[in-house]
Length: 309
Length: 306
Image (cartoon, rainbow over all chains, first blue to last red; front, side):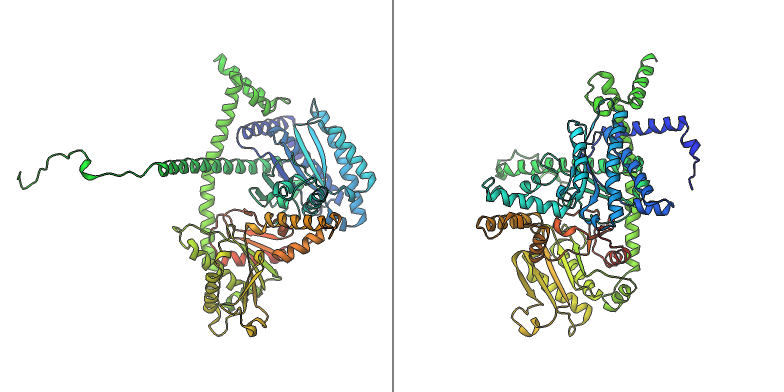
C-alpha cells in the first residue's frame, strides 16, 4: 500500500519539486568523482510482479520504466557507459513462451526508448550497442536490434551496452578463440597475447572503459556470469536488497555518494602515499651523512650547581 | 542585493533547465559558471562531511555487531560444536574458498604467523563442518612460498581440535605448480596416501587468475599453430575443462575476510555462480563470519538462468 496517494505524487508542484531535487543532486554529484562505466544486473522483475499481484509482463514493464529513469540520471551525471544484463545465454533455458516474450519486449522497449529520448532531447544522445553472442540471436530479432544500433551509432553522450545472449565465460572464450585464430594467421605474436589483448577482443571492444561500478538488485550476492573479467579487480560491487522495478534514482544517488566518497578518499590516500614514498626515496637518495663529534660547533660553557670549577 | 538575486537565478536556472547538463556547466568558464560549479561542489563536500560522520557511526555499529557475534559463536576448538551448528542448516556447499589478507605485523593477529594461524583455523572449521574442498586465496602468493610452515600450522591446529590420534587426513596443493603435499610429512608415505583425504586445501594467488587464462591462450595458440587443434575448437567447455584441471572447480561459496567486497584479482573464470559473503568492516578471520557465510548459503536459491 502506498503511503502517499497518487494524486499528491502526480500533482504538478510535487513533480516540479521532484525534478528540481533530482537535477540539483545530479549537478552536485557531477562535480565530484563519477564512474565512467556502470554495469547493472536488473534482477527481480518477476518477484516484483509476484509480490504486487501483477502478471510477469507487468514486472518486466515496470523494470523497463526504471531503466529509462536510470538512463536519464546517467545522462545528467555524465556517465559515459551503462551496461545492462538484458538476456543471458542461460536464459534460453526458460520456457519458449517467456523467451519469445523477452525478445519481443526488448525490441519493443528499445524502440519506445528511442522515441522517448527523441522527445526529451533536442539531439539524440544515447548510442545503443548489442553486446553478446549474436550467432545465438534469432535472425529476425537480430535484424531489428542491428537496425537500432545503426540508427544510434553516431550518438556520443552515453553508450548503452545491452548485453543480450551474453555470458562472461562465452565472452572470454570468444576472445581466446579470436586470439588463437589471429596467431595462426600471423596477425599477432605470442608476446602480444596478454591481458590487454584478451580485453580488447571482448564483445565490448577495446574502446569500452573498465567497469567502475557494478550494481545488482534483488539481494543475490553473485555475478551470474556477468562481466567477471571486468570486475574481479579494482571495481566497486554493490548488491542491493530491492527488486529492480523498485530501484529509484535516489537509490542510485546514494550509491554514487558512497562511490564518490570512497574514490575521493582512496585518491587522497594514494596521493599521500606517493608523497610520503617520494619523501622516503628523497631521503634514501641522499648520501649518508658522516658527522665527526669534534667538528661540531663548540657548546656553551658548563655551569654546575656545585659552582664553577 | 541585485547581484545576489542574479546569482540565485543562475543557480536555479542551471538546476531546472532541461537542456543544460552539468557537462555544459563544467565547460562554462564564465565567472557565473564557476560560481555555480563551486556552489555545487561545496554542497557535495558538505554531503561527504555528513556521510563521513554517518560512516563513523556505521563503522562503530558494525564493529560492535561483529564483537557480539564473536562472543555468541565460539567453537571452543571443539569439532562437535561446529558440527551441531552446521547440522542446523538445510544445505552446505561442497567447495568453499576463503579470501585472506596478509596484515601488517603491527596489527593484532597480523603478520605472516597471524596469516598461518588464520588459514589453519579456516581449515579446521571447514573439515569439522564436513566440507571436503577448500581453496585459500591470498593475493601475493606468500602461502605458496611457505607450504612447509603452513602444513605444520594446519597439523597443529587439527591436533588442537581433534586430538593427536585423530588428526584428519589433509592434502595441500598448489595447482599452479601441479604440486600436492600430504599431511604433515607424509609425501612418501604410501599408506597415508592411500587414504581418502578428509580435506583438500588448494592455495591460490593472483597468478591463478587472468595470467593463467593468458598462458592457456598462448598454449592453445601454439597447439593451433602446430595443427594439433583448430581455433574453432576453443569453446566454453574446453576452457572450463582446462581451467578446472589447472586451478580446480568453481567454488560454491567465497568467504571474504575483508572489510569490503574486493575480489582482489580472484580467478575470474571461477566466480560464475559463486555466492559471496563478507561482513562489512570486518578484517578478522573468525568462526562467526565462517558460520554466518554457511547460514547465508543455506538460504540461497540456486537457479541457473531460470
